[in-house]
Image (cartoon, rainbow, N blue to C red; front, side, top):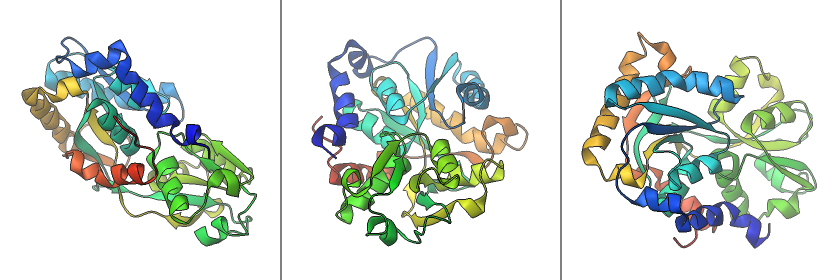
Length: 300
């Protein structure tokens, strides 16, 4: 992978600091409606918006301010939108959060819980007919010239963490594989299980949900590598809002209420998500360390 590709995501975010929107992110806290950005957790925008409207309505009620929901279709795009002032609040992947924090001082206030835990795992998956039984097979002679799919370059489990693992093993995926794709997690699983791609990067939550919904079968999605535990998605605020300690405390309180409310309002979060827990930037250090080790976090 050449230098421009390796640093594309980080350079793009860094350049935002010269734009007027970035000045807004560094200035006084905004008033009026709050713009909530969420990643494309669901297969399409309409379903994604419908899934997170109840959470937006809950926050609006508890914070006493309108909350305008905005789905952003890539993790990289969501990080940029928080950096340049297009969104005030964001529910975002860990790597996207680390980028937004590094380049625009966005701050995490809470971490989402999945089945009661604030952590998840990156995976590498293949299909049972690939002949690949381990990460060593994939990165050795058996895997040379195969096709491999990453998520978008703002994805933690779909890009940063598996790329870091490849790098630690001395593998440049652009040279080792015959074809490298960058696409969405759902597409990775669908194409891998269909045998259209030899292997790809995913995360356990996505794989579990797609199996449960009948979108793929477990027998066709073979896990050949799993990462160490990774911090779950971050609920973050812009640098401007982070300066308002009273607001941050109210927001953390509103998010902490979500878990207990799920018993009577199950639509507040998607299935298997069980609430939020307050966390600060130190929780995301493993992701920042991976970004530094791969050279993807440059100078501010």
